[in-house]
Image 1 (cartoon, rainbow, N blue to C red):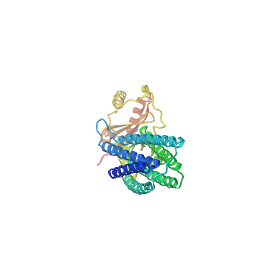
Image 2 (cartoon, rainbow, N blue to C red):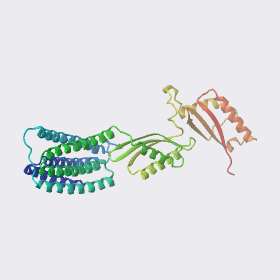
Image 3 (cartoon, helix red, strand yellow):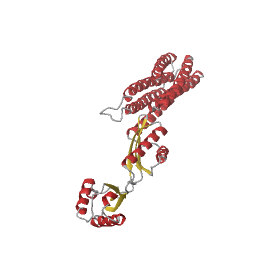
Image 4 (tube, rainbow, N blue to C red):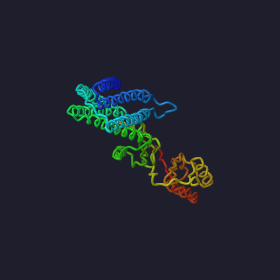
Length: 377
């Protein structure tokens, strides 16, 4: 599609500039330069697409999509430069004391042909851009539309000049310069927003959060961060799940959320999800010296405190739950481990109380709970 637009722009630029000089139409020459900037933008699109579509590599793990963003930024700067030159030339001619000449009627035919070709290429390019979700191609499509509109201005200017208002041709060239500058500023602004990782619109972020909350097991969503890279959306999301489920279940919930978001939002490509047992957005980050000990240190401390207790046996499994800057401890026993006792339920309760008493001076332990698995027979 871009190659087709490139050849159409090349033909438009050449014909407008040559006929503009021959027909003495400054507006048509300005429109030809606008088509020339379209030609350069097509070249930028081709180069940026070639590099931007390359797969991620070691130096660019997120891909090369921002080559397209950079090309859009350069395209905007190019348009502003062209606009400034056109505006200066038009003002100089309007302020000069030399008489302004009226263009030849042939300029009307060129303007009409340009309007038809540029409107067709605009509609075709915009349809492809929508299918590919390409912001660069969308920008290039609207660049085509601006060229079609500029040709409309030229058409009106030439008609006015032929009617005796020769200054309309210069005024039209000045208006074209302002139109081109406006388009350049818009392209630069959108590119800069992407380069500084501006978040998606609030309504889109809210829709993403609602989609994540629709998955069973997700209690809340926080720390949702979004950004764009070319035609792709990247996001980081914290998913709060029930605090006592297994790591594998929490991970599976995250997999379902990521799949649902990709199915619901076509432009979401890269998702980094973090599974939380609680809303850590409301829990202040502890000082380094206040960090809770990890399993090896906890196991060694519990062994030192419990190994001398009467009737103590190491449990089959110990599960640690880190919640609200404290640790909950679940101890799992089988009835066979307590089979030498006559009343297993009472002994289990007494053992639990003894274990709690041995570590009650540790403020970061919130509770100890003992679980007994019955015999399978």
